[in-house]
Image 1 (cartoon, helix red, strand yellow):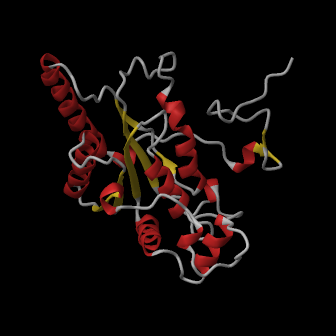
Image 2 (tube, rainbow, N blue to C red; image 1 turned 90 degrees about the horizontal axis):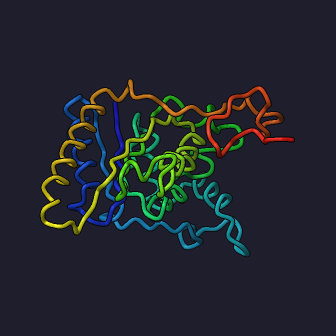
Length: 255
């Protein structure tokens, strides 16, 4: 078994970095071959742009999808993308470790998706969703928030964290992953008053232990339900009788 852990945090001593390291250690103890990538330490360029594709299919305008496919078909993808793509295709478990910033993933992680989920090798019109290239493999979002669990609940002031993560989970499902229910550690703070530091650090240590315990049973970790292609009329609109699993894809209310 192989696992790929992708860390998206600029501070190597952060709690996110600690969780990524703990996850790698736990999986290795269980006999999993682990590859860990720190996107910031690697200096990963998150911008998909023409300069990544010097031998262009179309010079007059930059079409990211067409240029990605052209580069992939002619073995012209950038070295970093080619390496990440090979690791991604070889893995059985992908873990994305990041803090929630401005109600989304850090820009470097979104850029990783833009550049590494290459049109052609990773998806096309026939290989998407339940028929995707990564079908049979699992993906996990492991994230931290600064706010409390109460604030990040469905009725909390920060908004429903799981709902905020849904577009990213859907992107992973788009290329075929079975997406595991996200693992969220709330209340990860800095600059606390001295009298609060010990309790905060103890809570984070307990959270890290809990994460490792859960990872030891990762094949049994529950997954997020998604609609399959048969749930959509003409492949476009959710059928009336189909279950809606998220407010992002839901039935229209009439009347």
